[in-house]
Length: 126
Image (cartoon, rainbow, N blue to C red; front, side, top):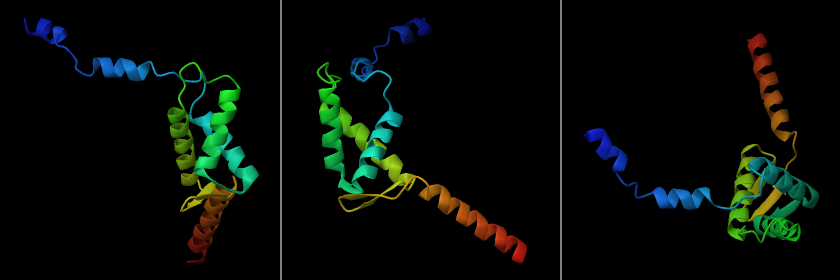
């Protein structure tokens, strides 16, 4: 009785879920790949903007024929934005207003080591 009714219940979000799942992607590409490209671009430039990097990445992917199979610029820009946020959180890059600045890959580890050294010295000195 009741179990059968539950199985037959219509999920109003079912069609929307299918649309999202069917969104085209570059096979094998995730946040890691986008982050690597963003990292390389910002390091090479030293100072840049989100739009400049996103435009370049989109143009490169388009010329590599990854686009045209339904990949939209909006989705690529979204992934680039995600990559920027990850790199900002790791202190690899810094953002001041619209400017993105390269900080360096070792910056995060260096700061962590310095904090550990200070803690270590304070522990044994105190």
